[in-house]
Image (cartoon, rainbow, N blue to C red; front, side, top):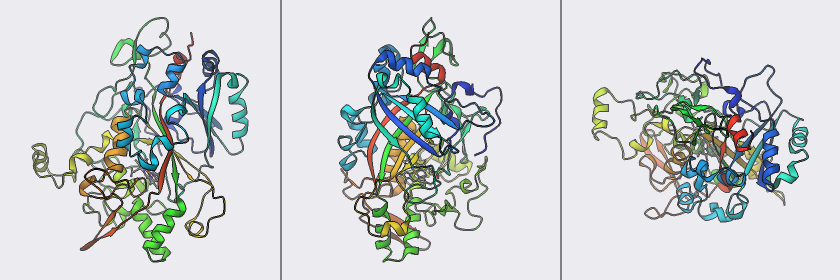
Length: 502
Ligand code: HEM
């Protein structure tokens, strides 16, 4: 994706971890290590010496990258004082597995943290080290990064091996197409209302220490100036203070196991064995074809050219404005739930319509408030698939005796976990009442567990042009959560502070 021009208002890229700006797409190999601190001194020394890759653009670009993130438990284990930790957001401090949070995120039943391989109870990681490398370079990177003091510093909880980066996620659909365009140069006025959906999003939605879409600064630890904090940058909104959050962000990591065979067998059975029909149903679940073509653009000229800031990616230049009933792209499709592509008002109403909406009238459905102003709920996705790929034809063939696990190491970056990742996951994905629907949750990631007031959650509705909607029922659970945690991905200066650098 093209980067907007960088002006004097851009961040100090040398202080930002590279993952925020680049998905490291050229580095097809990756491995994530979940660690617990064994020796505080050795761990701090390792963190001070590890060459963390910054977001500075270089020619040629680096062939390998190392990124480091820490959980709240990790900050504590490294000796960061409680008064400093208290400045981080409540959801980061409480962690992903707090009971009410599990309910809201849909982490119940098979998804419950008690079943997780890591992240639940005693298996909470302290440090996440993400290693990325161009083909053939990963082994060397692992060797050089783990080094001599590694074993003394850390106990390895898990190596999460990702498959080679490929264009498709395990169900076989092109992934990584739609991303918000970060306003690195801070040129657009975030506080102004948005009449039309746009893809440019304020820097402060993805990096702490900058203005967010409200025109405000997201809470983060802002510390007194002194010897210990001398290496930190000043806070923009309180220049006499030092900003531990600046150039850092939160990283949400979830290991999502995908039942690829179950997915294709279900759509095939629903389509009475017709593979072409099965493809269509699978595409309706996602909202895009396997090639990435959005269903919203199924009619020539549909909904294109309405964006004030057209995305450079052709497959991203659309909204759902002229498909309000979901006849082309079902309202409950994964990509439509994940980003309803609305502005501050649903359906681009006239000035009178906006006034009526402000006064609480003229809504088309109860869900309008929930799906408007999507600019406050965007995430930068940085996930990678794991396990060998499997075609739809392979998925419906008999499975070998030991069928390897497949899935997504879902990772996303956001400055406000609650308003961004958690909102998408709970109010849009897991909700059984999304945008006027009922009795269904996200067709890909929904857990199908009955909830109070909604005993049936395993349906899927496909509105038809001029006809009755098609209703698919008894969707199995295709995705199961196997682990997860919230991390702080600090700026490089902040990492040195955490590591106790003088
Ligand atoms: C195994 C689980 C998942 C699978 C297989 C999956 C698959 C996909 C696919 C195929 C796309 C379309 C390609 C693209 O636009 O890049 C997509 C888009 C997206 N997904 Fe997922 N996804 C999964 C989990 C999640 C989760 C847990 C979230 C967030 C809570 C999420 C958020 C999004 C968002 C925000 C988009 C872009 C929507 C847009 O802007 O149009 N996904 N996903």
